[in-house]
Length: 174
Length: 191
Image 1 (cartoon, rainbow over the protein chains, first blue to last red):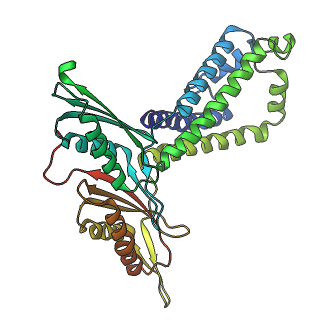
Image 2 (image 1 turned 180 degrees about the horizontal axis):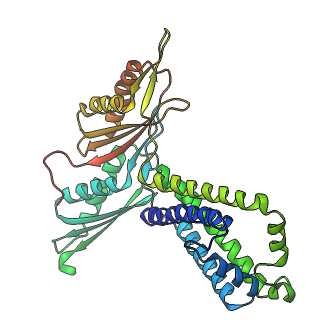
Image 3 (image 1 turned 90 degrees about the horizontal axis):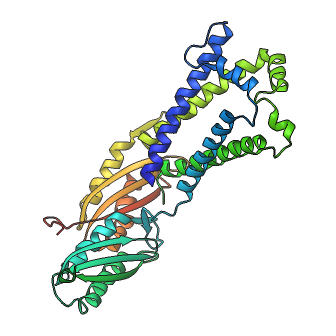
């Protein structure tokens, strides 16, 4: 979502930059009594004088504004996973990058004997782990993965260590 | 913690969404007769607005042009914020005598990063001086290997690297912030 916001911000910032400059130029051009340079504001002006609030074109424009506003608002209010997890308070405030923690937990889970692969998703207070094993029976693997990852998470000194939840899937069962 | 442009983007985009909703909602409400049928049948640009602008055109249009340039400037600043976060280029060094001495901030930051890279378990480090108001704000990004103790690296930075940095630059105050990235130990690959 941060990437979406960056792209949206860049596009809107560019629109403000170009729009602002164009508006200033058009005002100056109109001040000298010349025809519009790029923006057909004379047509827009005539249209705004003749069309009422209840006519179709303004209504579609307002619908467009409401839809764009709602879309933007939903995008801003959407719940996002944190980019960092804070470490315990000390003289120097510190945090750990969430993605690097996810990769570290993948490595840790993969070191457990019997785990062939792992996927990890870390949220503010949960670390969901999906481990895959080549063994037929996976029930005895789960507590060992939980123990290894709990130890790893505990060693970091996170202010709010996420609770580790592990699911083990046997490849033979897939 | 959010990075600078992300926080800015969220704030500006939220305000913009509320503005769009407000304008669009007002336009629709007026068009559907929420303020009376007569107002719904009004032209979008009413005579009152036209008369007001023509009565005040000696200041209205110059002001509109200035505001347009201001909007363009805000757009430019916002666009630049996406490309790079603000950073300090020079740090003033305390001097007892007359004159003024400053130090390239990137040089000081690099020296600090090199210091941290010497610690066992540190795979890499970067330092950046993000601002110097009211005191230098130092952002540290440190890659710590899986087999290292994050707490120990943090303690060394707090008790060794930062005091050395502060002493070297004769800084009375420093606002450090540490960002840790967990990295593979050297010579290993992810399965």
